[in-house]
Length: 202
Image (cartoon, rainbow, N blue to C red; front, side, top):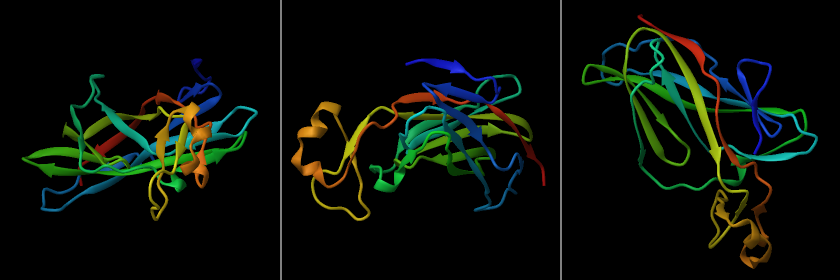
């Protein structure tokens, strides 16, 4: 797999697929120290197909990492698995040459034991908790990954339809998977470049 940074400082490109950190709101109010108080945050990646061929992308597994002003990562705990889920058919997107899409998920800041924390839930059911935030400037980057190039429906019907990974050589000879199967899904793991954001006192 070839890997190089593009001319844009905020993008990373892997085999012609470009990735960039996305965070729509960069100035975030710290929630009050009240029960149930939260500050919702959206974070993820923008993916662009810079190749000459259509590519399938699985928008499923990924999580943020936070960096402090001293360049150290914010302590994190996880993943804690609260469930076991499979990607649904709608989690796979065909990206045509030159097209872009955004894979954005949500988390939130909250107070616990007099510490400002951030909770992030992956679509696969894993929880990540980041601890000991304060007001000031931080950076966030996003890790995106997929390790299987072929997925198919197996076993009984599900609604909505979910898919499970298979070995590439097995997908062609599995009669159970004839109804729904997706091949040639982009495989790899990417850590996007960090971007700045600010936590502010209300």
